[in-house]
Length: 405
Image 1 (tube, one colour):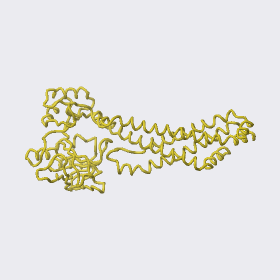
Image 2 (tube, helix red, strand yellow):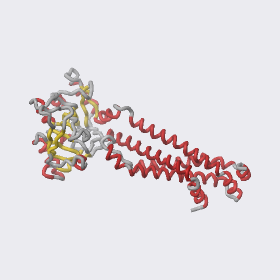
Image 3 (tube, helix red, strand yellow):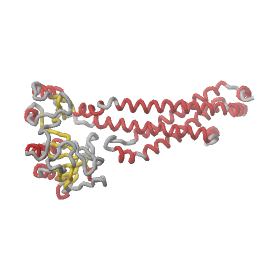
């Protein structure tokens, strides 16, 4: 290690209070930057993973307005439509309101085929795994009226630990039963999501179980669909098909709005504002403010190095040496803070996923964020060092020595 580097590193630890606080500020800034960008990337991943061959038909009035069950055959009759299924939000919970996960009522004959590319069935009835699991689950789903298919997160989470064959009681928040009891579902399949938008803690059950119970008076509610998911042929014009579907229902009883799955997914993000822009702005503002703090710390360090700069130049070192010392010192301080912030972000990743995984889906500190954190810290340190070091290029030895009296 050459002389300027050794001297610069000694300076890093010579003023422990100032540099320690600067390192702490950079640590917090890098952690927040990684956290906020990971959230933004997770949100974007859900939208990007949406199928290019799937549409969603909802009420033109509001997502909360139901659609008639009679709409599905008319959607099926559209050119280039391969399969359609009703989806309806159930909104119950397991044992306690805190134990909430999404539940959807879907078509018993169509749902599994619709999602061939979206999830992998990893376990079916009687513990069946491998290639035969999907067909076994499809058969069981069509046979058992109370059948439900769940994501692997509901099996792996100790709070739920649902297994194939378990009867799971879900307490309704919307569709109350006449006897005041819970809805019982029998787990016939467990899947692993293949697309970022699909959570691994979710349940799908048969819509006819819900609708028949309402028809018979065993439960209260409306026999209807929330939305229709529509698979279309590869390469077909989604805009034309969407317009054709909406034209069919132009005169009601409910007008529809059909959009791509990506547009439907982005609706939930836009419903709470431009969240990615907001989070990115917050992260940028934090980094921007920390930059000036680091520059200020390095300017103070530079003023303290004036006498040292004069001595070095008197000994024959060129003026750029003093500038280089401050650049190395700034880089070292920034990299130490950046490394600590990155370590904090990686170290808390599992904790964030555990506590907020259902809300912040696909949260991950990946290699791209690691590289961004390192490069940002490096640029921050080098720039701060340059701001403090450039004035040394114009000092002569006598001026530098005389500046401190």
